Length: 215
Length: 239
Image 1 (cartoon, chains in turn yellow, brown):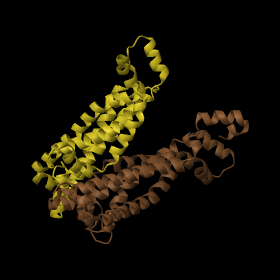
Image 2: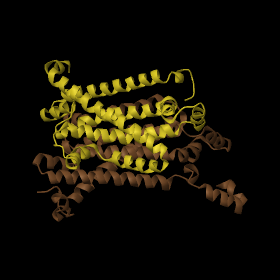
Image 3: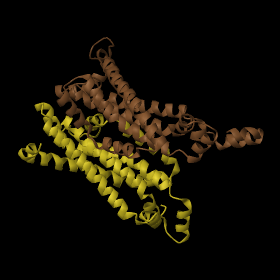
Image 4: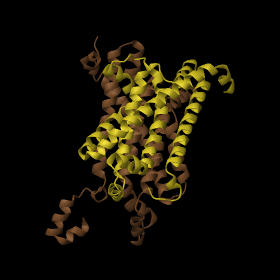
């Protein structure tokens, strides 16, 4: 396996960097889109059920189906990486909106009322009080979304854009297990790395949890 | 040829034809059902055992994490390359991918059961397996069923991808259409697979509402409780 890595290092490196980009850009888009949506779902209570239902429906669509339906719906080319990015962003938003909404709802009302009584305006209260308390649940959702994205990118190899999935299709075509094993190992390592980074970020951002404080 | 012509062509909906849409749908459902049943038979008892005794929690949590980080397409490709084409290795792959979510949510569901409920069950004289079946499982049922639902979605999606390595099912429409450049076939496959997944998830939701006892889901509304408390005081205690 090391030999394969050494002989095909440029292919593996290209596949890996493409994989990282295709997996993490949707996560960023997903975070940016889901935070206001989740906040809206909590502030306007009548929006919660529709948003959660639509998210559930979107999340249940199988990845390959979404990858090939998007060119029809939004007019991109089939072989464009934009398909993968938009599709994975849709999944990430669908997953995270629910996490953000539930996390914000779980914040104790007495805490938000105390903040308001202290003179916090809504925006400052959101950023300074509600988000930090809601952070663990949101980061848990982020971990699931990131790991799922990393796994789903390789499915895109079936339509030609798949990061490490290119190693899988190559192994299938050549009836050769080594590129596949390399691809699986790299994918799992990337997922473990991202998961660990998010856990570390959580520990850094919620120092009170370390000392047994209740969030 | 526009995108709908494959989906709406009546020749493709003929039951008797070998490669028609209903046949593909049936194949897809068969693989999904077989893989889910086998995975449930493996995952749920183990999850119940680990949750009830709280030993081996390490196993439950880490199998869940590992299963989620495995690239599904990679696992399929590996199994096919090592074992060869055929339905058995592919169903094996589907089972391997369906077990982790079911195991983890079954374990999590049992862990989330109120210890007071378990305590009172023991206090009533129930033996351990009775406590499990009569107290813990009914309370944990929503989470267990949600685990089966997410495993079902995982299996439907992976069975679609498995068409690339030779499995039948609706994924064949996608993959064949891609290789033949028949884009209407691809869209037909995508739409049908998406609809299948949505329908299966909805059915799972309905099952969840029907099977979970009303006392657990809290579905008895405040209005009903208040009304019964006014009309028949003794009923309120049983609500």
